[in-house]
Length: 409
Image (cartoon, rainbow, N blue to C red; front, side, top):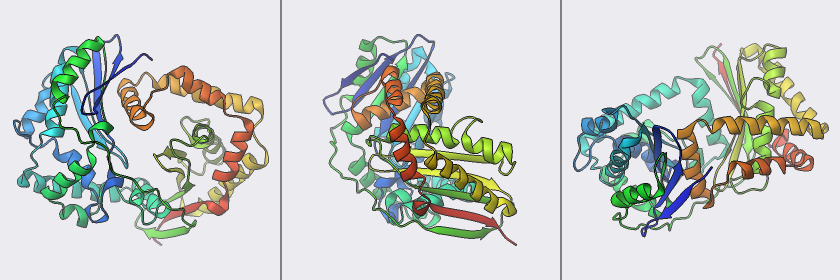
């Protein structure tokens, strides 16, 4: 897909992706997330993401929320371990309005004390709600096991204790230390010439003072695999297992994405779904995931089932792992897996807001954006030997950490 990048003097990059549509999508990606917090300030990055919608130097909460919604647009945001993202979808005439609002909430929020106290209650409710969903909570608890003692192991939402103690000073210090202008991308996908995107972006972002990247992130140390079980007031058992995996920059990243998709990724035809759910009817949900990060990654497997069926599920899962390790994929099997993965990626291009966010992140992570042809070539370049090496390393039972929530009684 065609794209253009314009860098402002302060380091902020404007990403322009032309698209012949009446609907436009835009985002601002900041390379800062929960891993950049101090342990006692857990949940701060996510808290800031909530508060930027509350009040700015010139707008009230209602004015912020209505600025785009009043013209039928959608405005939202989210926080991850490494990013903060604000995004919007809107009709083409409202580009100026959207980029101006991004500027206002990111760079001119005032964080008044009364709004902070109200939003703390909202986040505390969010934490409580999350903990009431074991199929969600187990993911965070599992990451804490895999990345013990490291910021990547902490819950993005923080804890009730840490969030309750956050102050305006904490917010200001975090933004100053982590909102680096050369690690920000404002991206626009829409039916505009490059000149309009550059002119509008420059209008609202060229005067932002430069705050260049200077921090360093500490990679997590390798930890010993552990197996933990907990009894909880739940109806069925929930199980996670996994292992630290390859980073965004590792040569095996594409191969592991392919293995993940083959084993338990998107679609009903994955190996584990066919064997565990369709053949034996053991688990309603069984899926794998792979999240590559800047200096590490994590591969996970999740399933939920009746307490009495957990051991059977374990046995069947490890049987499939052993098959993959003992009988490497044939060229035909590997090519089928590649075709499926390539098709899913191509269809994913239709999700335009997801596409522009992904492109903006790629610009931050790699200082470039691969076109589909390059992405497909990387997939096709994965060899049988690569897949065999990845399978033996990632699916090694001795390296797998596990976490199980069992029902009480």
